[in-house]
Length: 386
Image (cartoon, rainbow, N blue to C red; front, side, top):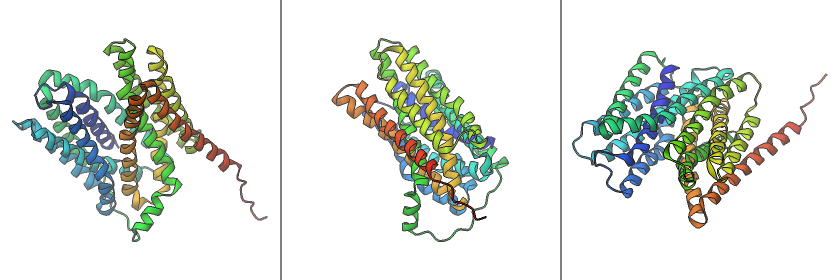
């Protein structure tokens, strides 16, 4: 399992480490805000388009070769810019990294599910989420330090070495998991399965959590600066968010496996905590920012392992890659949609109302999840014949 955790760390570290460091580029490759926006969109666009494709491929040929191929491609794409003389190669490297992450991210999730019994899916996805959160936390810090010490090319060099090392580790230790035989699936069958509440509910919760996480990372520092806080204070708030998410995920997974927490109640509580955190972001000053960061982190920490465990338990093993790829697509849409919603509302009004709009949207989801849970619990158990 450790190489899979390392793969999760790699994708998170690579995504946030570079994204947070492009604005401080010392190599002259990022020449304008338009270039910066294009480079950020290039990586995310590749993930949106390709994750379902590689998830389906993992079901067809096995998740292990897709995992290894993605890690090797990530290392190669990182090396392209590390050894290139022209800043123009940064575009090719960023596109290659996004495409590679689209391969090994859903494959790693599928292997986490395949290599662990259903009774331990909560623990497994909780630990996997912990190391991804660690990558999200350390990415901006270590990425910024590397760019300060040697520019973007040093950061890409480190990512190339990291990707190659994790690929070698996975090749040596991750067991071969052959693809399972499966019946032919039509487009109608796929649409029916993806429209099933067993897929839609956890995927929507994962998208909501990712939207709130992205908004917290991107907009809480803006609120801090507006309140007269320095970069240290606002940076600490973002770190609190990631740290809370990292700490909660393994505990939520263990509680699910031990029967102390159900998927429905956990997702509802996670959505409620996330909405409450965004509502706290509407409060002025450091107190509101810290409360927002902590609650969004806790909500994300609850939703992530429970959502993936629910998807794994409701999906036929031979379709795990496809399901994880589609779920990752949902998360990517949340990652983009949350900031867009907040920015649109903030442009028309203020950032405070932007936080409120997303809080209301996620809070509505929490209410629906809670009502659905109560309705399900009120259904009488079928009587057994005596």
